[in-house]
Length: 331
Image (cartoon, rainbow, N blue to C red; front, side, top):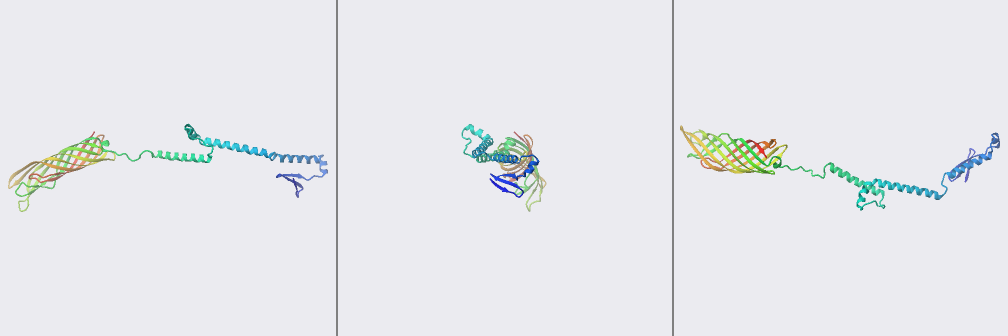
């Protein structure tokens, strides 16, 4: 113990980092004045300071070591409980198979990292399901057969636009017959396989003759009457695609035969001469149609068709342009 005297009349005692302040002994007259035993109070004060020093630290090194061992044991128990709480779900699954379990050699930090990785994977999986990543998001292909119908019947009416003139070779010299816009009517019957289709069709086309033009130096144009009738039947192969809500378009081409009848009434010097021809000719056509479903299994369509006819007899070959409007029943 080391004693240090202060300037204020107190004695400082240092021992084991404990500072004991001992007041300087007062004169006996002070104690006599209050009838207090001087030495008794000094002894009591020293006894109190000694007890405070002994209370401030463990009694021995062994007691201190046991105290720290208890703290370490409690920390270890808390660590085990924290691990069991953080890995309760994974442990319950792993215990069923018996292949995975808690390995005491693994640190809590590594287990927490593993659980964090699994949590991240769950986030990725949930985002995939939220965006339906596991489901093919490519648009489903729609076919005419499924969307419109497997079989179809399409009656139509239309307008025929013949060539501006048709060559006529029934005279000693060739002449040109001027034509007028005519009309057409017909029906198409077909079947679809996905977007492909096949059909047979039959139609009637009528075109009027207006006048005949002779080459120079023959007479001037003569008034002419007559008509050209065409009974056409054939088959087509086509390909179509649906679009929007109930719409579709289609391309098709085909071949066929036609019975062509031409009647020409020609005025020559006040006399009417009639020229008549009937023949069966080969035809081929190209078609583009655009349709819209107005109600279930019923649609309306417009079509443009180019019909080419071979020439035979006195009337030369010709190409007809047809505009068709019709209704279609699908089933």
